Image 1 (cartoon, rainbow, N blue to C red):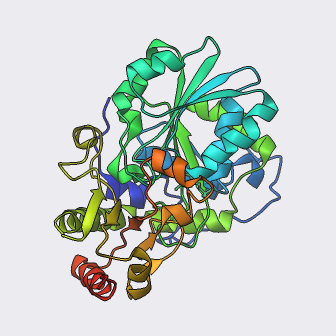
Image 2: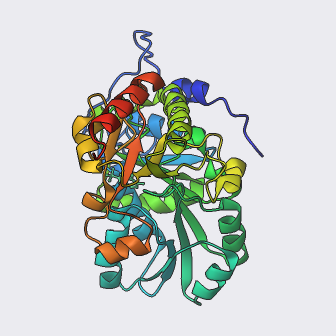
Length: 384
Ligand SMILES: *Cc1c(COP(=O)(O)O)cnc(C)c1O
C-alpha cells in the first residue's frame, strides 16, 4: 500500500512528542539516564534507544520513509556498521555497489575480513552482474543511489526484484536523495539508512545517523545496536527533530537550485561535463525519473582547459570550498583531493573521477546569487 505523501506535514508532526504539562508548541527534552525501573513498559536508558525523544524521532523518520519503525544513531557510520553487524555473520557474503560512500567502502575493506564476512563490489547493478556475483552464502545486497560524486542511479526495482527472488536482505544508503526525493521502501527495499549529518540535519552542525524498516528488522537491529552502544544524545536528538521540521522546504529549494545550475552549467562553453540525474542527457535519467520524486540537491561538473579549477575555488565568494554536504549553505569540493584522495590517479580515472571534477552541494541561496558567484569566479580564473 502506497502511503499518501504529505512530507511537510510528516516533517512537522510525525512522531510528535507533546508537551503534556505546559502545552508548549515544541517537544520537551528528556535528558535522564536514570529512570524508575518500576514504571510501566521497558526500562528506559539512552543506550537502549528508548528514551522519549529517541522513540519520537524514530517514529518521524519511519513515517517519512514509509516504513514501520526507525532507530537514531550517533553517526551515519554507527548506523551502517550496526546494520552490517546485525544482519551478517561470519561466513556470510554481501554484494555491494562499488560507488558507495568512502567510509562504508573503508569499513568493508578494514573490518569484514576480520569477522569472516566476504564481499563483492559491483561496478553496475544489473540482473546479469548480480547473478554472476551470487554465492550460496550471499545474504545482503547493499546499494547507494544517487552515488557520490558522479550521481549515478541504481534501479531500485532491479535491486528488490533480484533480492526477493534470492532471499537477500536489501539495504540502501538514501543520504543523497533524502526522504523528500526518494522513498526506497515503496520499491521494496528492506532497510533504509541515512547519514543524518547531511540533509536530515541540514545545517552542518549535527552528526547523526538513522535506520528504518519493518518492526521485525528494527527489532533485530536493536538487539545488536544496543551492544555496540552507538546511540545519539537526547540533546542532539531534539535538535535533529527541530531541523527535520524544515527538511521538505530546504530540500525543495536545494533541488530547484541544483536543477537550474545543472542546466545552466551544461550550456557553458568552458564546462566539459555536468553530472546531474535531472538532465535529460544523464545516462540514468529515465531510472531517476521513475524512482525519485525530485533529482536532489547534489551535482558535479568539470571545466575544460579554459578554466583553472584551483583558481576558480579561490575566487568564489559566496560558495565555500568545504567537506561534507547538504547544509543550507552551498559548498564545493574536489573529490580527488578529499573523498577519493586515497585512490591512485589510475583508480580514479577507472571510476570516471577526473582530477578536475568538482562536486557541488546546493544550499538554499537564490539561484541568481549562486550563478553570479560562479560567473565571477570563472571570469577571474580563465586561462589567458
Ligand atoms: C556522510 C555520509 C555517510 C557517513 O555519515 P557520518 O554521519 O559521517 O558517519 C554515509 N553515507 C553517505 C552517502 C554520506 O554522505
